[in-house]
Length: 144
Image (cartoon, helix red, strand yellow):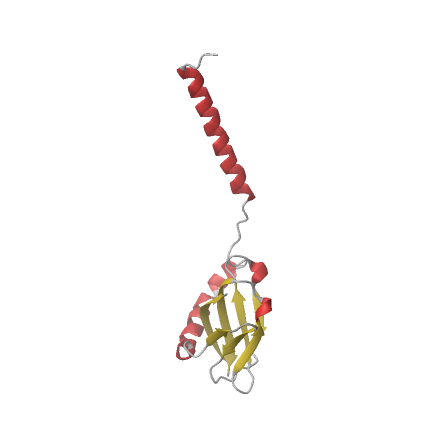
């Protein structure tokens, strides 16, 4: 068989189309997830969140996360929350998210078992209410 320019061009077009179809197939198999499932209602209430972030500015450096071999220790400021939660949000997948109620001991520490987390980046979203006033802080934390 003789390989002239027409045959080579046809083979190049077929290979290119195969490459494009492979990329289309791979892109349809990739899971696309939003950061928040109900982002639109949350966007409408975002001014409240901004006010809570302003309220929490004095406490932003008082939340300290440390990790040892068996647990994560969350050092809390001297607050007396009516209600409060810490959400460890994992951007790479919602199945890794963890939520805890703020319940400090007498030394204002929370102990969380390290076995509940996988290695990687987490964003700690801390929300609490105290005397009808809301507070909100986000801090990034890496588990090793």
